[in-house]
Image (cartoon, rainbow, N blue to C red; front, side, top):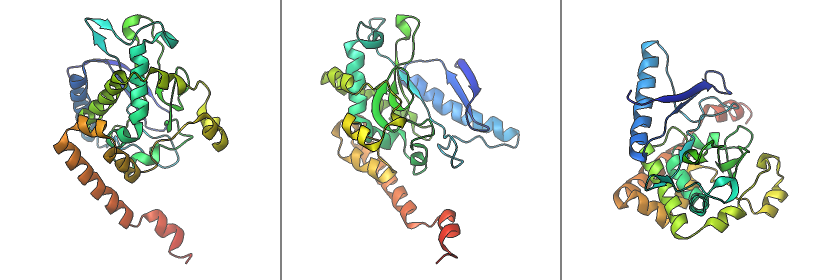
Length: 269
């Protein structure tokens, strides 16, 4: 397919696999994501199987994410490597601050289906808390270990593979760059949480000032419509059509009756 697979392994859920391919520039990586999804489905079909990138195809087990690793380079040097916490630079911390600040709006783009929000619930390894960490996976953004400066990067753990990678990457990058422009490094420091946030009570979450992602596509779209930075990154035409299409999708979901509702209520009432 024209790009290199770095690693692959079986994931937590049955029939679930994680495939990691090597990094490249954002546009090439978006091309690779689109190619990857198409080819995997096509090869599976040749074996009378269906490979799905649906975020939560099976209830009550882990869903599928699209963990996105990012770094910025300037004059051939990794601008994310520095002397701050976990070998990060001020630039990297500001970038993290931007993503966390715009996360509710970004979610509408990186998690763009009704089903996306069945994955974004506590307890199934998907992050819902607007925080970051170097070691625990309950936070939205993680700083992976790096053996050398060129590998210093951050990982956004909330996107899922149903998203348009071009729009998703554009939203993440635009949020990060806004964080750099606004110097949000201190905001990022305030949102560093090394504990497992899944273990926090509601009182503890409130005490720590930890907010959560939108709970459904409708709430995420409301956040997107109020965020000029993320809308601006999409461009007027794409933003307008995206919100229009996704609002129609969410409305259609709200007026439909699921099998779960029929099974639970039809004979009971």
